[in-house]
Length: 258
Image (cartoon, rainbow, N blue to C red; front, side, top):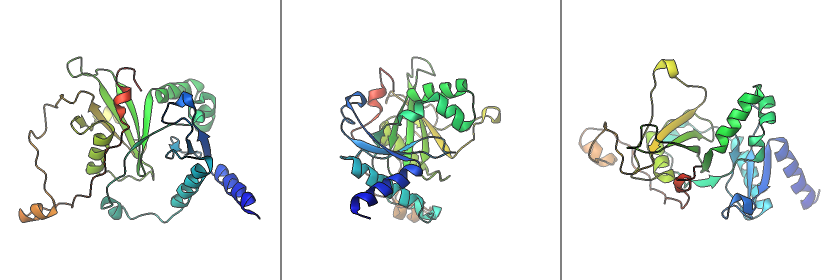
């Protein structure tokens, strides 16, 4: 088998395992035009995963192969994940056209076409951001508390390995990177009568206006590292080095929507 045959065989096997590579056009926007990225979806997955953009088709296939090898690696101990280095930055991602095919979704998940079409319209109203650890779908909720507090960004967040780990610091970092450091957000612990608990998915609601503050919570900042906390008889994790905030953000969602 020569190198070309080997490459074709790797691509064939990746496609059989749910991977595909797409090329961006001018219709996808300036940032995606001419770039390539892989997507991955298998039966039973709730949504499509997308890789970072690459300069060429074969680099995108190489990224897909790296993702496939990581998926088959030995699972990481959750305790190790909690003390892992800081996350990398988030970048805008794009779901493949198949994610918006109501007929295919209805057949795949065994739901009515009407329910599938509703899900498609829901996805069309979202922007998608990804890094090496998380995927966040972002949707604008128009002034749910009235005009005084304005719009709210709904961040639907999942780990790409589908694990249940819920790390407050990482959700705070996601909020900071995708919306902004001074934007205030919250989680909801609902009444059981409206509980939704169907996947390892986490949700943040973040005010679009950075001046809005919740009427509950601490009023001043107090952050301690491990050494300072220990001096007061407390226990604290050390802080990892923070990553720079990427140029992409949900600013594009304001006004025209995601």
